[in-house]
Length: 548
Image (cartoon, rainbow, N blue to C red):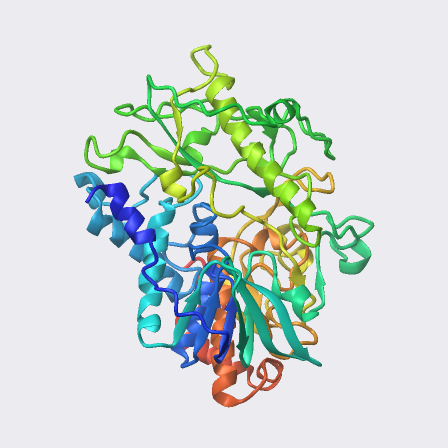
């Protein structure tokens, strides 16, 4: 079997979808099969719960797979700073390459193998490998009947009785509907899909400084001011070939587009000049694809080719690849002209199509106009790798959405809790911690006209109160829809933190089911016992190991 056929077979669902029924009853429903959803399913089934997880695409894995975003992680990730299950996932990715790929002898000897040697992460790898590993992790629970996974399925209605959800109706792409009754519901969707359907109070966009007291919040709240989202894609480079795509329909617009941001953006969007996220001063970037047989050439600035590279040919036997493969998820294809939730269906589709056109326009610009070190323009050998992302158009199955709806939570994490400028050496400790994480307060240019907001963040904890809505009793937030603000969402949205959030939500649901206690009572009366159970399951609840 050829390599691409083999990988396609891994992406073909190793977790078979269960037979469709008009009604079903389970203990826990998880809406969304991203990293938070998968982690929630692992934890809830481990605790004995019967679980149904739904996913709007045909791939589980969210950021890592359907959105094609290599993992953004804390700098201590190889030794601590995540749950045991997330570490098991990372180790399994490396083992997958060692077992199934023709690694070079040198690469086989690297304990912390980075398949792409991308600079953004210590584990830049292919989406399909993450997909295969996640399927393998979930397969035992599918086999014993505790987990059912419905693909191409989204929630459309909810039956809510006062402060409890009784059932949610789902619809698949064939138009069939299923009503699922459960005792607990985990919203691990990319956009917070359950929140409006269930009447859960939620927040979008930027809160005001009067609301939060945050130094970087605006004076007036703006619910429509959201971080840009990005439609990622994968490319390789074949020297001497011409893979130039058809000129995108909106190329004239995007090639001339110069955003009006505060502070100002330095020129056109499709350019190798951008605002440095911290200083907001103009910064030059480089783009120099590695040709097969070539070593990485030095560049005067950050080489975008290497930034999110997921395959470095030097890690594999000669002639296995035509060249390196990299993921394009850069400032130049951040789409900031509108939101894809809480808008009409027509406006949503307009913005989704606009994001597609921006990404394709960026590729076309790279192929035809991008400046080269040799004085020429364009890299026609850039080839859109549709097989890497599993789509016909070559763009990821789902856009990378940095900021979704967020619950109005029992507790909300604020800038002053975790920002380095607001604290003396350590983030605010949370007595109800269910995990830890670390990433800069990183907000991309926004729909409201903000340039980057980016500042140092301290290693932080994930408070249980941020997973609990203020009113609904049996709904848990399971990803980036927890109680954060527009500002702090920038730190809590990344891969290992989302996994930790989802795993904590799944563990909490199982804990509540086993003891017939609601989540709020667990936080108020049984917190230490619950935290002990988390420690026994491989959670890290504080940063006491930092520096040891």
